[in-house]
Length: 295
Image 1 (cartoon, rainbow, N blue to C red):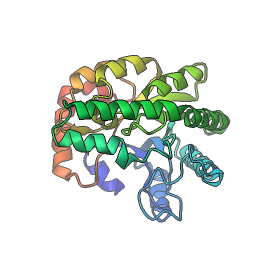
Image 2 (image 1 turned 90 degrees about the horizontal axis):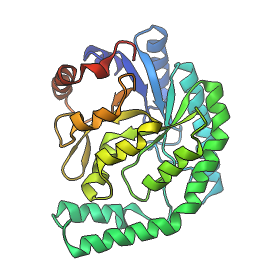
Image 3 (image 1 turned 60 degrees about the horizontal axis):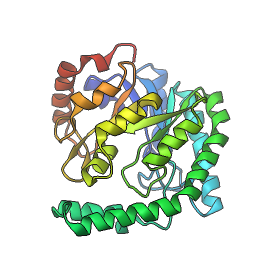
C-alpha cells in the first residue's frame, strides 16, 4: 500500500482511520526504513480491534453513553501514542454528533431533495429551517462535551508533540456545527494544541445544501486554520473524488491557505491510480506553491 503511494510521487503520508492492527507492523517497518514521512494521524489509528470496518465514528465523544465516551477517550490516547511514534505534527479529530438527530431524517433528507432538484422549493426551505431550529435547540449539551473532551486531551497532545485538529464535518447534525466551531476555536484561542482542520469535500457538501458559503466560511476560519483534507465534490453529494473531477473552485479557496499548511489528498479507495496521477500532475502545474519541499 505504501509502496504504491510512493510510486505515484508522494513522499509524505497522513496515517488514517481504517488501518487495522494487522497492518501496523508493516507500516512501522516502512517508517523505520525512512520510506515516508508522516505529517499527521487521523483518529482512530489504528482502528479499535473490535471494529471490523472503516469507522472513525465508531465511538463518539458526544455519546449519551458514558462508557462509549470513555472508550472514545481511551482509543484517542492510543492514537496520540501512535502520532508520537510516527513523529506526526497533528491528529485529526471528529468530535461526535447529536444522538437524537439521525442523519437519515435530517441532512440525509435534505440531500435527497437536493439530488431530486428540489432545493429551490418551499418544502426544502421549510425542512432546512426545521433542521436548523432543532440543531440549535439540542446543540449546547453536545458542544460542551466537545469542549470538555478537548480540555482533557490538551495535556496528552502536548506530551505527544501534536496539535489536535478539529475537523469540519459534512452532516449538519455533527458536532461542532459552524457557529460552534468558531466558538470552540475562540475558547481555545490561547491554546496552541487546538486548531481547525478544513475538509474541502465536507464543506463542499454543506455548500451544495445551502447551509454555508464555502469561500466565506474559509475566510472566517483562516485565523484558526492548520491544514486540510483535499478532495473534490461531484454535484450534488459525492465527495472524496479526485481533484479537478468535481466542482470545487480551488483557485479561490486556496487563497486562504499559507504555503506551509499540509493538504492531505483524502480520496475514495475506488479512485483509479491513473486518475490520481493525472490530477497530481495538473495540481503541480497549477499550484506548485502548495508542494513546498519542507512541508
